[in-house]
Length: 375
Ligand code: MG
Image 1 (cartoon, rainbow, N blue to C red):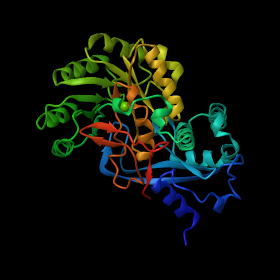
Image 2: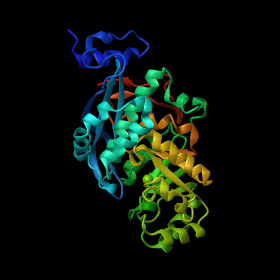
Image 3: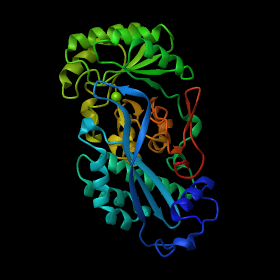
Image 4: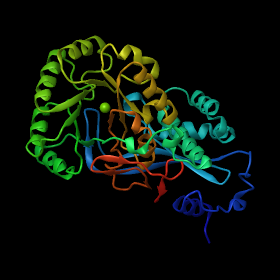
């Protein structure tokens, strides 16, 4: 006999259009009105390659997952807590579990107020937890309306652009191997900011001439060094540089930007929509991530705000499952530089969603996020 969990799984697999035996759990979630049922869980995502940036190195990542069940529909959400912003998986789950009642009693049809209240209740340093709620509610809403999320935002899935694929910092030999493995992707993203930057780029260039986008993750603290490095990268066919200096080194970054010829993108410096007008003085664009903004709705607001400031927009992600990455991909028709490969870096993805064909993002057309639940 199917237990409730299997029932939800089966329902997800056949899509929301199929007749759901709502009556089976009608006592918990009446067909109209009533509360939602929320479940949270940490999932350990195993990395295909040990992932190294200037910040950390590890073999796995834990992300927080949330299921939002109401009126016979399940919405799936996920958030990847970012250590840089003092966010951690266990704390994110605890924060969600502490306000389950509030999430369950909120009205998803009035999601603007509902999500603002959840955001307020979660408080600071819980953007990943917020993202898990927001994404689950967006998934639920799309399923309830019977439309894919991109349609809710009025977007054409054919406009979804080519995404970059990230090559983590490693030995020249492994870097060459990773570059070969990424053959399908027309644009690569490379993490630099360590001592062996030139060696890394040269290893990639020994394999391919394709365009590169480079993320220094705040790795350079000397502005003249940053300028030298970026000018060298420009000559290597690099299209943009992300966060060359620490977020707090605003004046130095402004100076660096005046001496380089490729767009400078704010990632770690862009942690709130209210910062965007000021960031325009030192950066050409911002990197929006659902895990930083706290979900799809707020990421949409960041994107629109950056556009209003005539800035470039990158849409990034952390190492996460296809849940968060697909949610972000639904907004990708709005951005210049999608960097949505976090799900491709793991070996045990619990979901199937957005696909990549020759680098281009292929959005699922099912309602909500359009996810298929695998595990
Ligand atoms: Mg970055």
